[in-house]
Structure formats: structure tokens, C-alpha cells
Amino acid sequence: MSFPRCDNRKFSGIEWFGDIPSHWTMTRLGHLCSDINDVNHEMPKAVYEGVPFLSAKDLLDDGTLNFTNDVKMISEEDFENLSKKIRPQRDDIIYSRIGTLGKARLVQTDQQFSVSYSCCVVRVSEETVCKKFICQLLDGEMLLTEARSSDANKRNRRT
Image (cartoon, rainbow, N blue to C red; front, side, top):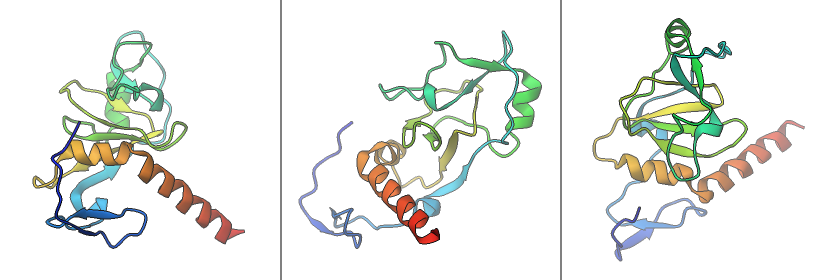
């Protein structure tokens, strides 16, 4: 995905982020989202036929979600129990947070599915924000590097 080049730029206010287009405003992700959540932390039993239950391994390197190759299926009852906090829907972002850290994939289907607690669902609410751009930003190495650095700094302060 490419975005139009903007030559009129300003400092973002965050050193590691650098310059941004002058008409942009920096804000926290949480201010752009109606929800950032994960499912209940239970591990459901696999069933032969049911609702797809994706984990971080199902966030494919080609930018898509895996619904076909060796996907765990769960019962409708488990789906209902696990997805009480949030159910992925079209235009949500599935973000891996455990195991394979930092992969972001935009949901481009209306198919019913759930995600394991190794992922979270990011629901961008602002219509003025390009969801594909937020997904690409979350999927980028720049944010992952900063997240790892911040996490390491937090761990160092606790010891």
C-alpha cells in the first residue's frame, strides 16, 4: 500500500517518530478506537466443524488472515462464551501480542470468527482515519522496535 507524498511536513513531537504531514495531528491510538480488547483467557476444545479460532500463527506474512490452512475450529457455544468482550468484525485490526509480537492484519471479511488471547482486536472508530494506514503503522518495524524498547525499560525499572 502506498500513500500520496506530502512535502509540507512538521515535527511530530516524538523524536523516534520523526516528521509528519503538516495537516496531521498526533494522538494516542486509544483516542481513535472504540475498543481495544482480547477474548476471555480460556482455551477452548477443538472441534471438527465450527467457528474459526485464529491465533498469532494465522496472521500471515502476505498481510492476510488464515481461514483455511490448519485452522482451529471451536464450537458455537465456546465462540459465544469467548467473544463476550469483543467479536472481530470487518475493518477491525487483529494484532498479535503474544508469541509472534507485532503483526497487524485488517479484517476484510464478514465471516464469523474469534481470536485467541495471543491477539487483540483493535476497533478504529474515527471515520477520518484510514484503517489501512493504522494497520500498516501497527504492522511496521518502527512501532515494534519502540514497543520492545519501552517494554525493556519498564522491566529494568522494576528490578
